[in-house]
Length: 430
Ligand code: 4AD
Ligand code: MG
Image (cartoon, rainbow, N blue to C red; front, side):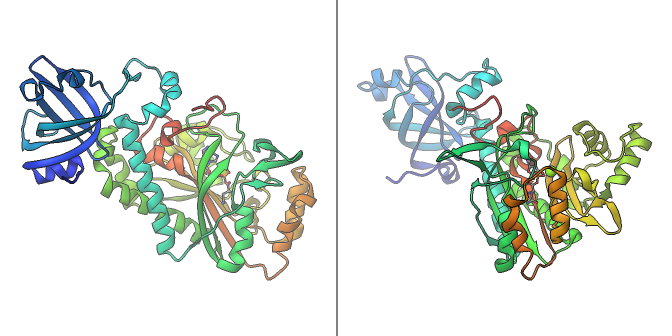
């Protein structure tokens, strides 16, 4: 008999079925053994009467949570069973016995972190991982449907792009090299051949932040596009975000429900246009509506972003941050020269910066000036200047923190749960 999934078996609803998976719960008496079987699709109650398994009873009695089994039997509707169906088992093959599963409700976050390789089997993590798969799948679909090519860049790189102090140094045959913080500088070379490109890959940040939204290794969804200006780049960011949300709401209602996510909170982001507000306007709004005074010229801090975002139920684009505190490649805005042509897309519900993007400076002298003011060595960037010496065109792009988007969509307390095996300052195993 061919094995089918638990969901397929329940769809069938009656007759003979063969299913397999892991024991999610078990209880028994000397007359019956009740197993709740779990596979990737669902769970189902299975009942084994002692009298039918006289010879095998010793073995069946040893079944603990997480034992893997193959089950053959008759399925029928049963309103008392947890998922509405029950299998009357006629044959069971025990594939792998399980030791006492060391995961229980009393474990704290730290211990669950240590046992992450087992905690992944929890319904919580399964739900999140399914949503994560929808998110990354939707991101690929979105970019490809818009005519983007997937383009990859090296992870081991000779110099930086974002802030120097957040680079992980590696010993590369006794030479200092670094782990990439972004794909961007390589992407800027490649738009001259492919024009519209994207990538989903790990980025690394040696950030000493122990916050609910910082990982040291995260999956960075980046795009770069030739000929585009800031507004067009933000259009992509907004459309992409809406596309992903729509797909998750289509495919993962059950998982969101299991996670206790109030999906009404995601509705506005699907329906409304995301506001676009300048940094100057943010300072004014913070002063008027939140009685917070922020002195002009600094990047917004978490608390300021959060207070500001209390006023919105969709993501918001904040544009035109002060030029001096921005990465060197963000160009000065000729209309407001103290600011750069850049944006952050902030998430609602205190989720902070989800996306950072900008137009790119193609003026080599300006680039050199910015780099010098940040104490960077110009030699490290010679290839970057070179790109802009041969038919430079206006271009730009953005980077999305994929886990931050997942955290918001799932309504998670911490970004660590948005990835299977998180890496943070203090979490390095398993
Ligand atoms: O704002 P960032 O530093 O921008 C860049 O790296 C640009 N080069 C991207 C580009 O234009 N191609 O990072 C982009 C996004 C942030 O908005 C944030 O969501 C996420 O990456 N991010 C992190 N996510 C998790 N943990 C961290 N430590 C992160 N640092 C940035
Ligand atoms: Mg940023």
